[in-house]
Image 1 (cartoon, one colour):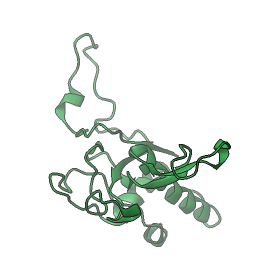
Image 2 (cartoon, rainbow, N blue to C red):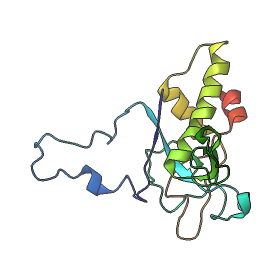
Image 3 (cartoon, rainbow, N blue to C red):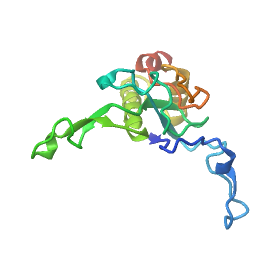
Length: 173
């Protein structure tokens, strides 16, 4: 199972520019993502609940301005305020093994949130009916979860998908 970050360029991945053959490319070239099932879960970055860590990035589950978006995206995770090891702005000191931060951000912080939901689902399912394939996981993520919301200048039509809801996924899978 591959879960990948959609990227932080604020780009609409459905834009025709991504399907235009560049000069020097073979005439047979086409965008490999157009209409193809490339087998991965594609993740965008959404806002955490306002007030988390005393900060406000807009309405919860709204697309953060830097997140790429488009029809290909399957789900979102928090793109700000993610606590993780490393960096050391909350806990520093001489031992780097003790460093952590609550400012991990981007689609790189959103993806592990989706990975956790997928891994939990697969672990539970493995004991009952066997693991689900990528197409089934994407369908479950798209059919369940907490819906994406809009923010000023960032309508929900700029798709990053829903925030996973493990209980809802388990109820449908």
